Image (cartoon, rainbow, N blue to C red; front, side):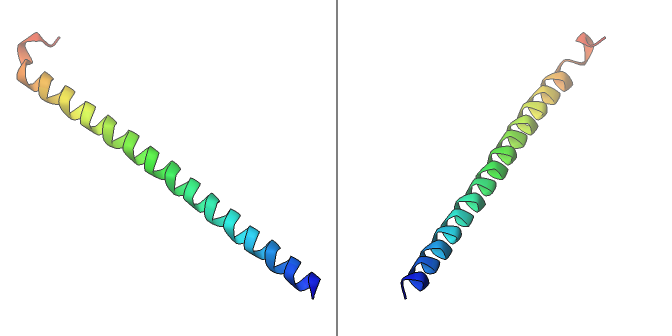
Length: 58
């Protein structure tokens, strides 16, 4: 009976660890998405700025 409880605890811990890893993976993806969205905003702003001043380019 004690072994069964120990096994249940191990399974519960494994499940909790798995959820933490999933959250971490999701958080990493969210951070990457946010960084890409910020880069897109920066590039759009730069493009608009360049489109407004065509005579100053090269």
